[in-house]
Length: 460
Image (cartoon, rainbow, N blue to C red; front, top):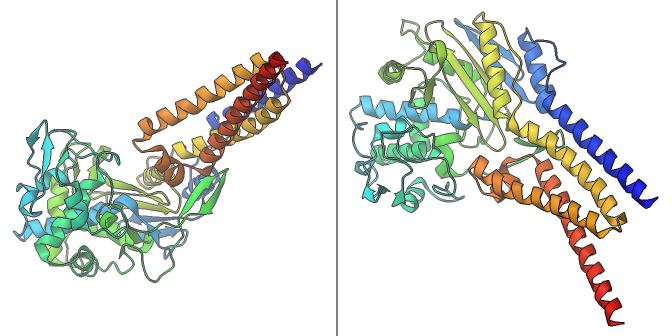
């Protein structure tokens, strides 16, 4: 009788697992193809559980907003496009030579490759070919309260993953170092220089270097169990040049207009910034080229994405067609945000629209909801089980699953498990792993109790 009960409960558990997994991998199968931008945005909200998303469409001077055009979001790595433009201004003024070693602008800074001192140039940083990667283990980001100069001093002497100038590897390190070069060359703080020489001249009054002190800020969120939760995080000063500006779609529409500007009499670009802008755009030759915070995609489209633990964003434009799109949202669902932006751009360009991609964190949220549910069921089963062999088999399976996650996730995401659990991943990942851990502990306790009772009976 007890055996039949166990088998019934176990079968129900397996059915629940497969039902949940089917739900994950049947993503958007039943949704009709989205032909309109408003439908795409609603699909985005349904898929991500994120309600705060703002979109701007720039079409030959006409600007259309979806969502709140004045709401301020963290724009993530789209910040690099501003840092890159500032460096280009210094290059055109002759104050920075992009083929000069960065040690010329950051005294004492060193890096090594293959046991020898490596020369990293400003161009290497702009092209993401310095030899740095985004590995937090190898090249940690700055802690709160640390300046750009202090962070760079701590990084100096590190080992590079490749010889400078030979391999592309996206890294926030590159653009934070460019931020320090701006400070050292100009004698101003990064914030002051960006505001005085870039943002104000371009009329970007709603774009902020770091967290704004006023304005309608949309609080960053974190996913968990198909809901979003407010997730405040402090902006660290030495991380700003690579990814921590705030802006809204009103300014992002203007940003697109600036980059698609043709330099005629009613130009929105002041004279002193026209040459730096042109220099950036003329650098792109082949699809995949990266320079000064922008990447060249297929069909001449230029753009960049942004993602932080609380936000995701994307901007794309085509200078020849004089069109562009930007999407801002307050949840880290980068793949779906990119897909919304790309599909919206395709509609604007007359290419039609496909289905939205589902972000990896959305997938893991659904999977670990299933893991949590099954973990609770297995806990009940384990508490009721008497057979040692069955307990051992379930315990071994759960322990193996737990170990695999703890080993593979840091490899897959290039970050420590602590950072994955408490910064980037949905809350359901922590809940699911906690539930598996509880089950494993229950198995161990039951086995120890059985062993103790067996030893006691032998002693009698």
